[in-house]
Length: 551
Ligand code: ADP
Image 1 (cartoon, rainbow, N blue to C red):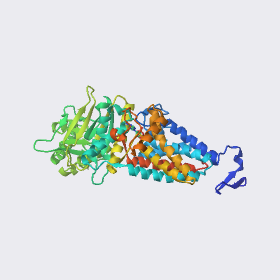
Image 2: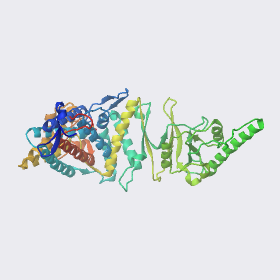
Image 3: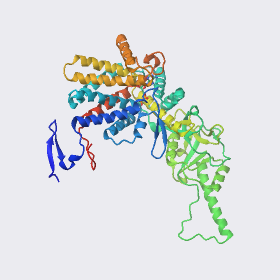
């Protein structure tokens, strides 16, 4: 019913409808609306700003049902916040897209986007049209990325050094995390895991081949990288060996990977099974035993040393397996079964009759790993063979409680991403805000050359870039403005791009020397995404939520 609605036009000449009925509801429009969007974005950013950088603080998140997460990861913090503001939700999505594509830099991208919005607000208040601001930011971001590209250094020119660079970059990404005490160990794990599974021809890393497995108990420095698959299981019988090595004359351990149950098929009859005499009972028992033997024969004939089974089996089957010198693992989940198949280059076999030698998986050793004094055990299917084409590795993460294990897992994931990004594109830029200062210098130089309105947008963009080094300085207890200007002047004086914030008190702001680097593609993505988001918000001037009031 549009009888009480009138059509009006906004300042750009776009039509919109005012429904008179709702006249008493508060309606923000134009500049007012933009201001409130930007303020909402700012409040989100202010929450996660303090976790940026190696001296950033952790946050405790408590979910409605009382679960506790301790983290420093921007994407994680944001994803758990219950926001009812639509613009704030956009920021959450922003950090998620950075996380999906790059996996690191999720805090930085939100800090940058909100700084851009702050600058935009100032410009709008000066009377510059939001679209002009957005376009100016776009241009400025192009220049920033060009500058970034020019200062990026390729670290893959020397194969030997590349490995070391990967390690250092991984360590930078861990600097701010809970594992920082152990960052050498974790950085090594990240580099070793990626190098083990990477496809150097395609320059890519399939993350499906790297499994992160957390296990509460022990301490963080018990974490380790394992070549192969780790199962939260043990062998089905306590008398089975705790280690299986290749049999004499063979070079690997053969595994049968089964999805068929180790039990005799149920008699296929509609009628009840009546056992009325001892003979009948014995007949049934013999039948069952024969069936078991048949199954074990299939396994033996194929040449398997170990049986991995998706289903359980009863004591009798278990005993037979033990007698036949066939260590077995039962109740292995479908996903794990697939992993084992990939890692050992074997096939998942659905029926005993289908078993054959070429379908068996192979590995160099299977052993039960014990943890210190606890009775906890895990089964490791180890793959040392270099020639295996699809290797699988497991990062086993230990820690004294679930919160620590979870956060360590997130941290390791971040550094795995950093290493993977460098394998994809081996260019790095200097961290600690050095790259941002360098871009900011270029953008503000350009502003000085311009005469039109764009110069304001360029200046705003340059100042937004400065927020990153300033936040890093602030989070490390330094005076943000003083530190920033000293770094800027050093960069200008020596005409280099590697001076940044010395967050860890190394008495040097030379990020090249300290080797604090971030992957080029991650930084570029931050600039692209933050600018895009800012542009999008600047173009919104009404939020209409279907079924609810307007904002
Ligand atoms: P994000 O979630 O955005 O990755 P982090 O909290 O991991 O945020 O912080 C990353 C920022 O900290 C980057 O700008 C990086 O260059 C900087 N940084 C990391 N380690 C150091 C260090 N040792 N010295 C100075 N800056 C560092």
